[in-house]
Length: 151
Image (tube, rainbow, N blue to C red; front, side):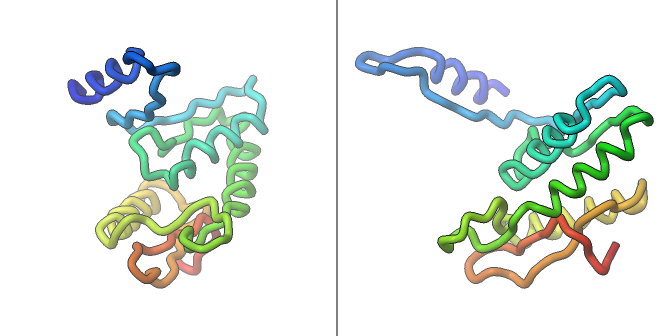
């Protein structure tokens, strides 16, 4: 935390001949959850969960790893998050196509993600995802937020 705060402080000070503040994204821990109550905008809740869970491929400390949903909106939110996740494109980001997500960084990350998928299956149910593609040359593996034969 000390290092992160030091970087944040330095980014917030304008140096000589500098016009703007430095932009920074500091990942300093935690696994964030999103709370959605019964009065929430269903579409906004689903969009927020999807972007927070899959933005930066979910490979950030502030990625939404848990959604805590009021029972009155649970089914509607889950359905919309699943539909949005199915629409995310996954592929080799070194090509000209504009994929939303690329490969996870390495085999260790791939294995860790799959361990968490298995934990999730034991603690609840897997609503979507878990399928993997062969390794990309020089990259990790692709994990898809789409239906899998393993679910």
